[in-house]
Image 1 (cartoon, rainbow, N blue to C red):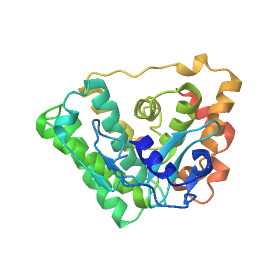
Image 2: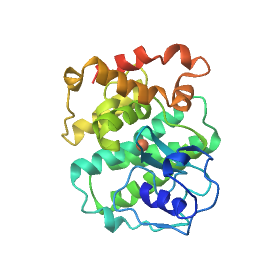
Image 3: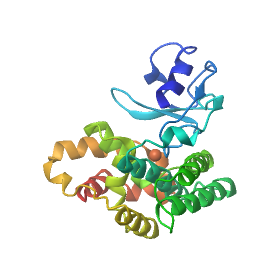
Length: 258
Ligand SMILES: [Fe+2]
């Protein structure tokens, strides 16, 4: 979906897409584009961002023209998603809402959509009746949409900043990378991580541990540099003095938890 959004813009804007990685750098509207999600959770069907992994950056093309002109949400299309990916992708929207709420850049719009998406995630993944049912597929599609909308006037936080570093250097898929990281952020998002672990247990899924044993100092520095260069996420998460907290060494230490 992100590539479709970026492609729409690149048909009308000149040069390499790397020129447009950032906020409001795109000069012209793209061509009409329609999104049909077949997996749910990233919120890409509604977000203003088309995330691209370039030679230097993993960063979105973000502007008013990125969003799809039209979206078709058909829950039958996500019915065959394997259970583990149903969980990891759905947790992306859960983590969007936790991060959107826990920071300084949110407002009434982002909080309202985030609250509703969290409520739906609990029904899909935690409460009695949780599981990959027809009814829950409807709810998951709406949760993904609302989680994405919550980010329109807010921002993701620590988990996503780290996730970009992990994915850029190791190629880990976005939603899975978030889950691998989020389990270790209990001190930053205590309630969210606690609930996430209960959902993980309910669906009998286990995430990898001790990944950082394989990473030398150079690899950790590369990962941390990618994450460090996402200041808007650190600002949202830690407030105006984020530069004093989210140093390269601090970010490396977070990666060492993995
Ligand atoms: Fe995400």
